[in-house]
Length: 219
Image 1 (tube, one colour):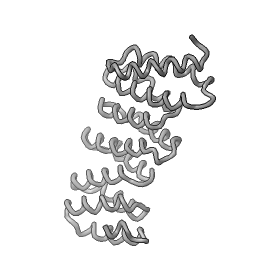
Image 2: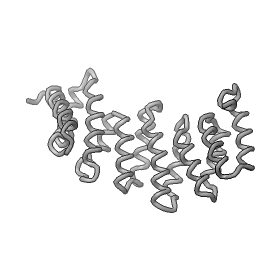
Image 3: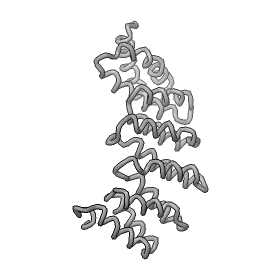
Image 4: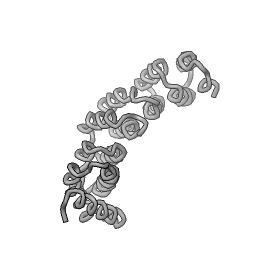
């Protein structure tokens, strides 16, 4: 608590990093959580080191700490860890933290979209797809919609993709000059309204579809 309140976060991080060297696995988990709250380069270096620890509990705590980072600086470390994960469970944990950063609306949309593009080749399982689509649904730009649209044909995540499409389209339709973009919204919204098994989602997609068609000059 005192470390978080200190006026000099780098000094606090240095003390905690020193304590990390002498702590057991349980205490390291607590220290890693504080380091993620403090942030900064010293804290990040300490957490990076913990990601490579031999103890799986420490590695997991470090990955979670990176997922709570104040800036997107932790993104490359999480992406690298996901690529190097020894099993599906570790990979999913890394991707969960990475996509948590990518879905953080405190970061610029372009930066988060770039993160999603970088991680896309790693997305394989249904749970990974769900996390990926959730992050994209929070970006709410036309390029994000382009990444989401192919998943409307994936039966395993069709509803999640539809939810992301509706979230993105809803925000885009609030723009003043939507006439040029509106035609691109029609087809994905049609797919959601026709194919989703979620009645509420279908209703929302249909309402947005009518707005998109009107803005595009279609009946």
